Structure formats: structure tokens, C-alpha cells
Image (tube, rainbow, N blue to C red; front, side, top):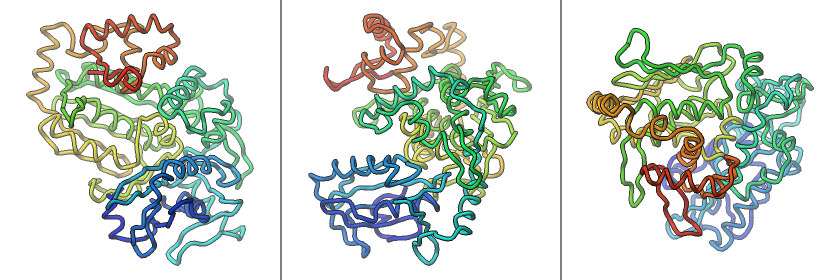
Length: 472
């Protein structure tokens, strides 16, 4: 998203809407949310008039208004199917504003049982059966993640992965509306179980299967699905290491990040007072981008290849535009909105487009080069430059020490490794939450944490009440 000053300067458009909201939410707010979900997505700024005058909202009401937006977006009587929205409180020119980012949705949404859309002539309610049918057809042709498998059952899911995902959401977002739902309600509310109003089919979707499915269930429904992660350094004709990933996307994210940690050096950067891992910051975004934007109906296999001078990723795509994606010109367009929403609520992705901007921001600090390529065609290609000299030093350290410095497969093994990965993926996490997620007694987790601190893999930041553990 462009910064607030740019948005206000440009004014309202197909994807930007201003609304007054001094003390309470505008009455027509969710009509606009509905039409953005149905059309091309957009951003709503509360506290700005149609004529670009910045009035602001009452700062004392900001938190309450944000909570109301989230609650109403999860209320099927207000918005159906429900779609949890992200809100941000912003200070601009001594005024308090609320920014609401709404991605395009892969489903057709109703507000107060009415369907709204936005066209070149303005906003309108869709009433005729022909208009409604055309909107459903447009959505179904764009988003394969909504494909319904009538015979897919909850028994085909990895129950442990569903539980872990929901636990992470509870920790990251303790007040999230999903936290109080049963698993059945969670699947329906998140759009992973749906009824196709055009065909009458009802059941779990492709996105549900990909996120949580057992390997045999995924292989049966989507036999071409896999991700080949390869290391091609000394043996460029073949490979030095390979992992063929055919599991669900939640586990695939962990496996790819572990592959990166195993084979790429790390570098740290002090941003303000926070010490951040450049490797993890860059490649968390790259991996997330690969998983949530792939076109899974296409049989083209995804490849994730580390060469001695670059990381190169190729995956099937349904392009929205063609050519090189430039951060300053980027108009985010989600390929799998429901998969993206789960990753967002888990803290693994942010607002669309921020990932690419982060990669551009940190890549030169990591490798000394910024010749980055995000090429959107029928096959999406990502190329991240790597420093040959830096890589050579890394390989020498690996050879002389018998392990890669910082390699979690070296010093850290077994159950301690799972605790370390959890801290890596959830910066600031507390001991009780770690114990809950790994299903171990707190005393056992305390022992693991003590060892990780001794070998200088983690650190504790903050006070006893508000602090947590971070990977070094």
C-alpha cells in the first residue's frame, strides 16, 4: 500500500475510499467493504472526508472502533461469507486515522443480504440473477482455491496441524473472533468450507486441503503438487542436497525455512535497538510468497533452488499483470485469498505487497547486491542474488567445523530443535506458550531454553511480564 500522504493526495479511486468517523463507524462502511471484496480490493481511510480534509477520529475511540470492525467482519448477519479484516491506527498530521485494508476475495460477499459491486460509473447493488451469475463465474474463473471437494472430510486433515495453527493464532491474536469457535465453525467462518451458490455444491475447498491435508489426501486430489528444494553448489549438473516436499502448506513453510537455515549463511542487522536476522527476514517473505500465490490447479512443479550466486524460484502462476514487479509500482493482487488469510492470522505474512518491499529493503544488506527479480508471467520467477564471497566463507566454515554455523541440524537436535524453530517463527513468544504448542511440561521447556541460551541461540527481551524469547 502507498503511504498515507500519497493516498490522500491521489484522492478516492476504484481502490481508495475516505469516510468520516469521528466517534462511531459509518453506517455504510460494510457496503464499501463488501464491494471491495467483490471487485479489486482496496483501502478505506476513516477520519478523512471525500474532499481530502483530514478531520481525524477521537483518539479515545480508536481501539474500540477497530474492535468493532473486526467483530462486524466476523458477523454473518453483517457480512456473508465473513472475512476478518486488518485495521491499523495511524497518526498523521496530529490526527488519528484508521486504515482498513481489504484484499480482493475469491468468494462473492453480501452485506445485510445485499450484493454490492464497484464499476467505472460508481457503486451499485447487484440485483438481477444474470449479474449475480456473472459475478460468481468471474470469481470461479479467477480462483481455483475455491474448488469444492464434496467427499473431502475432516479425517483427511492433519489434526495436529489444525490444532497448532489455531494455537498460534490464539497467541499472536488473543482477541481474534476465531479463537472461540469450534473447528467446524472455524472452517466455515474462514471460508475453507463453503457452499457454491451457483452450483449448490458444498464441502471443504482446495485451500483447506492444501493448508491442513494429509499427504495422501493431497496426493489423491492434486497429484501434481510438490515443491522441489535443491542445493546446487559444487554439483551444478545435478545437486548437492534435495528435499521433495509434498506435505500441507503449514508444514511446507517450516521445511523450506529449515532448508534455507541449513544451507544459507546468516547475517544480522541492527535496526534501531532491535537485532534482526537478515536471512530469516528475507526468506520468510520469499517462502510465504511462493506458497500463498502459487496457482495450484497448474501441474507445473515448484522449484526452490540455491545456486552459488543466487536463489531461484519458479512456480505456476495466473498473472494479473506481466513483467517485473517494482515495489513503488506494485498493486497487490492475492492469488489465493483464503490461504493468504490463514498465513496472515498466523503472523507469517502481512499486508499484500509488504513482503516484496522487505526483500528489496534488506537484500543488499544481506548479499551486497540488489539485482532482484520478481517476474510475473504464466510461470512466476523469483531471483534473489547471493554473494559468492560470502557463500565461500560459509562453506569453508561448514567444512572446517563439521557443521554450518547456526545450523539447527548441528548443535540443536530432537525436541530442542522444535522449540528453537518455534521461537524462530514466533519472535517474542513466552515459555508457557511454547510449552502449550509443543505439548510439553513447562519444566521440560525451561531446560531446553536454558540449553539454547547457553549455546547462544536465543535471547530474552523485555520485562518479566511483557517480554519473550527471540532467536539470535
